[in-house]
Length: 259
Image (cartoon, rainbow, N blue to C red; front, top):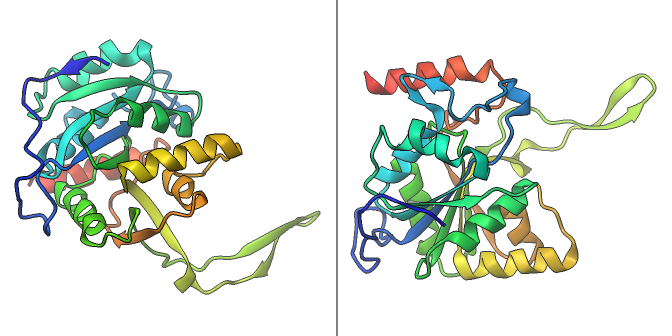
C-alpha cells in the first residue's frame, strides 16, 4: 500500500454529532477499479471532469468531510494509480489519510483487496462506488451510526424503497413476457455506501470464497453468510454515473449544491 496525506487517524474513542457513532470509527473503501466500458470513454469515467473537478474527486471530498471516516482506501488498477494521484488527489488535498489497493478482475475481488488494505483497528468498513460523486458526508455518517446503533446488525445499506412498478418476466419468442407484478413494498433500490462490521465482512468474504459464491453487491456476500443487513433511507440523487447521459444530470446537481 502507498500512503497519501499526513493527517493522523482520528481517535476512535472520541464522540461526534453523528447519532452516537464514534469519530473516525470507519475505514472507507472506494472501489474505482472498473473499466467504464458502458460509459464509452477509453480512459474510464472517474477522471472525467464534472462541475470543475474529476468525478472521483467529489467522492473523495465527501468521505474526507465525513466525521465517522478515519481512513480511505482507493481500489484502482495499478496502471492508473499515478494518474489518479496527479489529477484527482494532489490538486484537492485531503485531511484524511489515503492508501491505494489493487483492483481485481471482478467487483468482489476489488472489495477483497480493499478490505485487506484497511489499517488494523477499524471496526467498521464503508464500501462505496467511486462513480457516486453525489454522496454527502451526512449520509455517510448516518449509515455508520445506524449500523452501530444496534449490535444485532451486521450491515447497513443506503437506498430507498422501490417506487416504480416491478414486473417478473419469462423469455418467450414474442419477447420478455410479463408473468407477475409483485408488491413494491417488498423491494428496495440499493446504493452505496454499504457499511459493515469489519469482522463480519471478513468472515463473509472467506465463506464466499469457500463456497464459490459471487454476489451482485457486497451486502449479498454478508447475506450469504447469514448476516443481518438492513436498509437505511438515503437521498435518491445519490446516483451512479454509468452511461454518458448520467453525467449532465450529476454535473447539474453538483453545481446546484455549490450555489
